[in-house]
Amino acid sequence: MTRQTLPRAFRVAFSGLWQAVKRERNVRIDGALAVVAIAAGVVFRISRIEWALVVLCIGAVLATEIANAALEAVVDLASPREHPLAARAKDLAAAASLVMALAALVVGLLIFVPKIIRSRGL
Image (tube, rainbow, N blue to C red; front, side, top):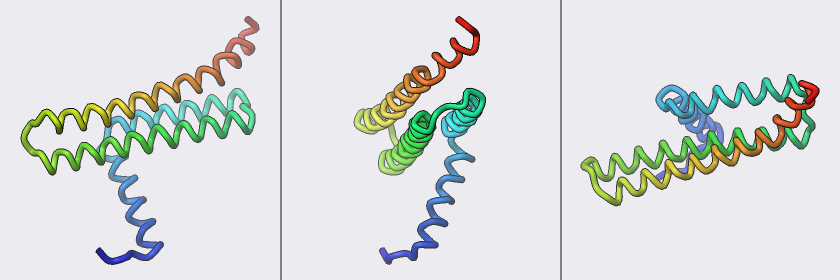
């Protein structure tokens, strides 16, 4: 394989991101939840460190979901018929996405629940 230029590498990467948004339901769901988290961050005026955590979680969840989709595509290509190892690989990749999403949820709860409680005067 020939080495590609940096601008071409970015074009290919953005093309992959666009494909993920267009074709992967979970990427769209995660993107919508990211918008909610960003809006909540603006509303509750979270700190820089909290913003850093929110942005890192958004990036990690989306990256994990995209990697999961890529692995599923490769498994489907390599094993068009059902196979226990193919199913295991897909299940493990989906589990990685779930673990990252749950970790991001916990971070979101730790950041936003106290702010919601304070805003309600509880």
